[in-house]
Amino acid sequence: MADNTAGFWETPAAKVLRFRPGMQIADLDRRGTPGFVGGKTEGTRVLHERGAVLSSLQEKLHANGRSGDNRSVLLVLQGMDTAGKGGMVRHVIGHVDPQGVDHVAFGVPTEEEKRHHFLWRVTKALPRGGQLGVFDRSHYEDVLVVRVHDLVPESVWCGRYDEINQFERELVGTGTTLVKVAMFVSLDEQKSRLQERLERPDKYWKYNPGDVTERKLWPAYQDAYQAMLDKTSTDDAPWYVVSCDRKWYSRIAVSELLIHAFEGLRLEWPPADFDIDTEKRRLAES
Ligand code: AMP
Ligand code: MG
Image (cartoon, rainbow, N blue to C red; front, side, top):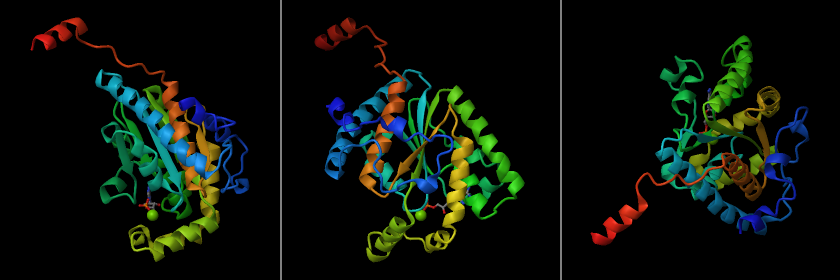
């Protein structure tokens, strides 16, 4: 089953989506479905089938974590409003047992967070051993919204790219596999998603008038995203660039990137820490 659905990828997602030096996001087809040969029907099927694979891999990581393995996987989702970060959590991470997931959404820093270094709140939110961590926004906001709105002087945000690279290198060195996904929606698709939020009572809660203000800063955000990719896609922690105008595609792409990361851990089920025959006998006699 796993092989059939993975077979819809003519080029593995981890290869086709990996940011390559010199790649320009201005040229990215945000309705594109690179690497995948099927359409929405196949994509929807693949999402469910690969969701089951992801779930089983995560359970294995969790089981190992219970036996003292401190490794973890951290999915970092960065994207403009309406790119589909929340849907990614529901439709991809939703396949995984919630007790194995450490999910954190980063908003405007609190007063307390503002008094600390920008990596302080991120460090506190890192996944525990055996867990799949999910960051809905992340430390990268500190070189995105902060850069676009001049929330700190340029001399400060400029140094953050190196600080982030150093931070992530240490993270990887201590057993966390990072899966960094930059999600790109087009300006037109964002407009129609915001329109939907204004037309449907079940979507009002997602609408934020500030999102329309941010649309005026679209070019500055695109520049900030380009700089982020140019400066922080490292061998330790590469960026993956995902087109998000088709939600079904972005979801199967991220499923595949996560499966690739889990497979890299070469996980086995932890051995029993009790004598199996003795326990079978005791159970039979009980
Ligand atoms: P949402 O993800 O739609 O709930 O919105 C969260 C908001 O928090 C976004 O507008 C982000 O730009 C903002 N945000 C997240 N991190 C930071 C940060 N470090 N500094 C300023 N604003 C931030
Ligand atoms: Mg929002």
